[in-house]
Image (cartoon, rainbow, N blue to C red; front, side, top):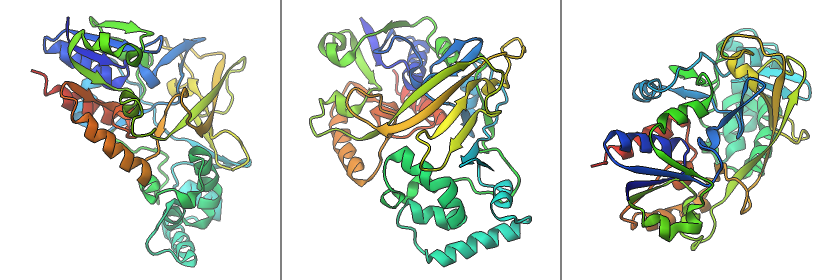
Length: 370
């Protein structure tokens, strides 16, 4: 009945479906949730676009991806400039001259670089073997202890000495007063929210919600010549080789009858004692205004709690350590034997993906459509 059955109405599935339809193919998209857009789903609350599954800030240096998404929606000029809160002390993120001045009282880039070098030498680190050593070699002991250690251990549920160094190798460290966390050529939030973007991608495509693919696999597979699967790869194979590990996130979201809670879209709580990792104030992704430019009188905040993943929880972050990477390689070998199935996206490829990379991967896969 269909050329393609796409499992998952998130970014990967929606982009692939749009490209398949544009190539003249018939497509059915299904999702086990009651809404489209996967984890980038946004819903309106008192005129505020609430990021239901955590903050998503689009950023890319990929011109082709930027041109592609702008065919469907307009992006605002939001720039990600989070703040770190350590026991009531506020610091700039990414780590920059504002951070170094607050931490050490240094004023010049030379002074800041010298302080970092001094602390790295005192720690005796030459070849970082884990996340702790990598962090200290990048920003010194003081910043690691206050702004990295507690936050990271809450996020991953493991001591920093047990986490691989590559997790933090891309940590932005700047000897300038630049507060732009991503420093990407293009950055912003879709006007009207990410749900609007996915609605546009799926225009004219049949979508069925509240459908669990794995529960009805045989009958659904019979509907299409090819399958695009964006769910967990280990679940597809019935966990036959064992379960891959993830970190999950729980959100406590509140509507507050005040105009301003924290004055910024994201504040990270970097001490170990605060149980949540950060608070998101959603209205500041759109500068506190609705689409008509009116100031929003209320605000919505979400506290994020990181947790170990258990079956039934939503999997968020793959734990790409040596053990899980080896297990994924075995599942990938099984996936390559599935001739008419494309495995894609964060869960299908067991990979932490930025949004632009997800879109680029879906566009690349869609080039094989004939």
